Length: 385
Image (cartoon, rainbow, N blue to C red; front, top):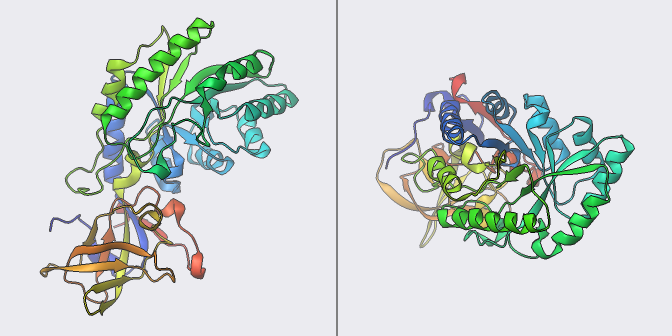
C-alpha cells in the first residue's frame, strides 16, 4: 500500500494521539491558490472554521490571504495570527452583540448578513459607535451542491442566508438604515463539492440575481461566492492539492462581472485538510468470531467526522509492511459510534503500531472535544523534525 511519508523514528518520543502538520504541503497548496486566484484577480479568504491552529493561521496570513470568520473568537484568532482587519469577513447566523462590536471596533472588511433581524441589530450597534458597517447579503441561490445533507447550505428555507423572495423587504430596510452600507452579495452552497457543475450552476444563478438586482436599481461592488471546494479523501498521496485551477476557471468563464466588481472566495477544507494527519497508536488487536478490531488510542474526540457524517478518511498503518488484513478501526470512547472505519485494509497491526488517519487537517483539531475527560491532543509540525 502506498503510504504517506512520516518521521516515525521521531514519533516514538511523542505521546499519542497527536496532530501532525506537513507545513511544506500547506505552503505548496497556498502557492497554487495564490497563482490560480491571481490569474483572475480574485480575493481569497481562508475559512478559519476548518482549522484554527495558530501556526497554520500564521502561515496562511503570511501568504496574503484574508480570513473568513464565523465567530468573535475566530475574528480574534485571525487578528492574533496577523490577518489584516480589512481582509476579514464575518459570517454566521447567530452573531452576538459582542462579536458584532468586535468587528466594528476593528473595522473589518464586511459583515455577511443572514437575516433581516441581524441587519437591524448591526445598524443599531454601528449607530451607537457612530460608524457605518459594510455588509454583504448572504442569499440562498437555491443551487443543489450534490453533497452531504448536513453540509448543504444554499437551498431555500435553510437556517443560513436570506431567501430570494425576502430580498425586497431587506432592500427596503437598508434604505432606512443609515449605519449600514451594502457592498456585496454572498452565497455559499455547501461543502466538500467535487462536481464542478454545482459551481457552474452557482455562477449562472449569480448572473441572474445580478440582473434582477439591477432591475430595481441595485449594483454591488463585491461578489462573494463562498467556498466548498472538495478534496480527495481516498487518494491523499496522489492528489494532495485540490483542483483550484478548475474551480477558479469555472467562475472566470461564466461570471458576468460589472465594471470594477471584485470577486471573493472562502475556501477552508481545501486549504488545510491534506496537510494534517491524526497520529494514533494501536492499543489492542481484538479477535472476534467474524471480525478483527484495531482499537486505537484516538477516538471521535480527536476526529469526529466519521461519527458525525459517516465520513471516510484513509487509514494507514505506518509502522508495518506486513500483509494486508481487514480490520474494524475503532477508538476508546464509550460510544458505539466511535468507529473510524469498517473492513479497513491495513498492513497487519500489532500493539504499539502507529496509525495515520489522513486528511485530518480540516475539522480534526478544531472540532476536538474533552468528552470522557480526555485531554486535548498536542500538535506537531514537519519543521520540528
